[in-house]
Amino acid sequence: MTRASRAVIDGQLSWWKRARFHNSRLIVRCAREVRAGGEVLNCYGPHRAREPARHRRAQLRAQYFFTCNCTACVDTERKDFVLMFNAYACQSCKGPVLGATCAQCRAPLRRDHARALLERADDLDAHAARAVSLETRCELAHAALRIRQQAWHRHHVALRDAADNVARLYADLGEFSKSVELIKQNIQSLEYQFGSFSVEVAHELRKLSDVMLERIINSPQNPDYRDWCLEAHKVIKKAVQLMELNYGSWEPLVKRLKQQEALVASQLDMSRTPDSDSVHHSLHYNLKI
Image (cartoon, rainbow, N blue to C red; front, side, top):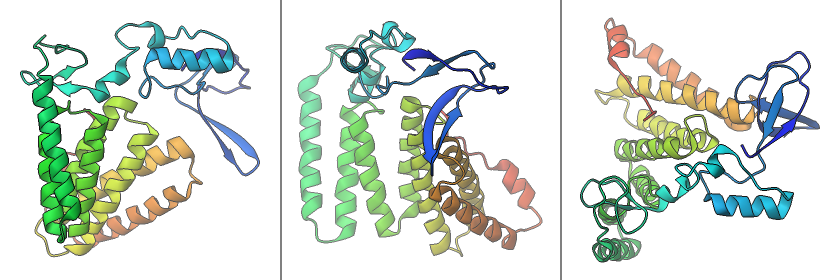
């Protein structure tokens, strides 16, 4: 949120979050409650999770002719929050290193060591691109990812991109469980940057749903089949909720996800056993950090 604008909400309790057109109608969805006639905040575009404060403020001055004084722009601890997602990893405590020393333990950054690691990772990626077999390409790309994890902080945006690439390779290879684990890691990082109810998390959950569904379809005899179905059902329901929250129930992706949810529910019904309830209660899958 950047600057306040006022609006009267007739008999409703709302808080503007996202505007979206549905045919000729403009629908504005709320993120939290505001009393009718109260102050409504509107987002002017620049986001603290994507750009540092000085860039956001410069854009707002150039386009809207005001200096933003919201909490994210003024609070010294929050205004450069986005820089964490391009930070090196501290070799001592694995915390984010934004300058010459670690923000947590004050250990100095071994920049030459980090660069050497990244160069090794780039070499492995180059070999992966030339590999003939998908297995070799996947193995080399995952090795490069592990090396980058030593150099970059765990929430580094490029680390997410690298993990997403390896997850895609594992899915192509039919190693769906390995793909699932990498996507889960990315979801945790996206939740940290954009929030648990963000559109970014919604789309990553949709991707996770697709891979989980492929795992179910391709391995019906696996002893973990029912647990996979339970987990997939929970993930798809969460994806539906976030897609409806961010886009509305008319979004085509919501319809597709609901079809997947119904398919997995039918598989659960067919695989029901006397001890199903105890299995369901013992399964815990929490995406939040």
